[in-house]
Image (cartoon, rainbow, N blue to C red):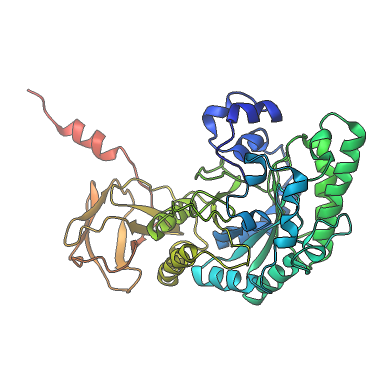
Length: 453
């Protein structure tokens, strides 16, 4: 994933992206992919096939990202090799020190299931170049170094044991391979390096059974033509006809990938926000900027509101254990999802969005009002709903809630003084038709009725 500390201007010079992207995208990978977010015109057959492949993904809404590699031995962020200027010959010594306990991924998968996450995406190779999978291309891989076994195989088996979909992250950029940078200016190096990368992807698509997601990352220093991305994706779909792929090999792919921010794609375009739980993707022992369970829940709701997914990261330690803070946060989120999951899963894009107390999701004619700041009593209302409400209840308990509705607002009455749920309480608002909110209705209506003498 991207590293916030590098100059965005310098990065743009390297990848040749437009200078205007700097103001629009605060994270490097978003900058690198800004040119491919809008897919070309597609046939009805292509669109229908994508809808078929992505049906489960749109329903799932919530996934777990896992960043794990040699950088976890250092515990100083996944970009340590580049940010600290560690030579490849020195950095690669970490491969012998990387010795995680067997089947650590079982704990990841159990945690994901408890958190209400429906799929997982693990780093098979990050920018450092170390392969967590078995490959014939290099000895710089888990089976031939400290672990002595295929870590991707353990992850795949763990995810499937918990009924979770399996995704592979793969970084095209490679700081370790001697052709990883020179491929930009040396055609022979480019051909060697592209074949190396394509072989990895073929191995990943061949050796692990069905793969549900392929999550490319950082395309530096080549463009789609240089990577031969059309050929790359053609191979992927021939080997895995049901897979979905993202947009970070410089092609539009099946979905967009806003990073560390929530930003819906244009209408008809699938998207997934990927975020860290603190400020680091890989294990960073000194990073204490943890998000609260409430922040995580609110982010998940915001993604579901806009029709997107939320891919939330953990950075396991070198032994494969999950930082205690990550476990605590995800367990709390899972407790909320146990009671409120139906307000997130299989939800539709939601038009109502204006409230100072909370946020909204929707499934059909049912509006879910997620109250962030619980007022209690008769003090909870929101304005501008132009659809008639039939009934309301608390999602966590099923308790009916009295309400009154007029042209201006819906007000909920007789609410408990203390919030019935934590960290967010959700009201189920059953409407006669698809709920619509006219955000400026009250302002315009009131102004029209006021006489100024």
